[in-house]
Length: 219
Ligand code: SF4
Image (cartoon, rainbow, N blue to C red):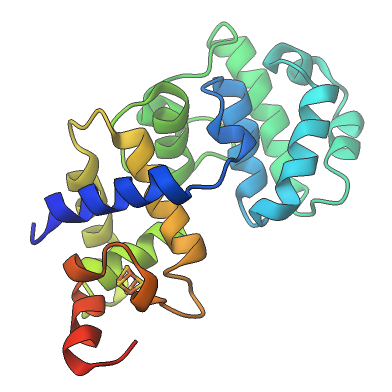
């Protein structure tokens, strides 16, 4: 893949210096990672932080969450919206306790059989909790990969290709945890949906879109 090695190197170096210190980046506890990933579906990081701590204080373990009444779980989610996530998280906790001995699975295929877990969340939990070299493509990551490697692709083939590229970028890498966090961070703060800040982007020289802008003299 064109420039993949350099892309990874530059991105990781930037992340070491500029990555935000977020509570779910300080832990590998699978339950905490699952809670953060459910909260981050459809809610911004800045809003999730306070709810994340509050939820974990009320439901300190996956066993405690599984045993909690549905109304209590919903109340703990109050203010975050999209309550279906809370119901799915509650059902996930019950499935993990009932079917997996209270241990969150570490393989994406097993994770995807749990309530509320799609392809992205399965990859994210496997990587962020267990440091597996799995791709985790959310909307931020998909946007960065598309702009950097496949700017001309569109429609359903683009999605498949983006996942393949994400997989190739992390396959067999011990740095998969950092890489996935880094590319998400880049999509959240530099290569955003609203604007691609190529002029301040660490991977500009190995990004198809960014290098075209350089040639054309645009930012
Ligand atoms: S160079 Fe521009 S388009 Fe490429 S990843 Fe960076 S911000 Fe996005």
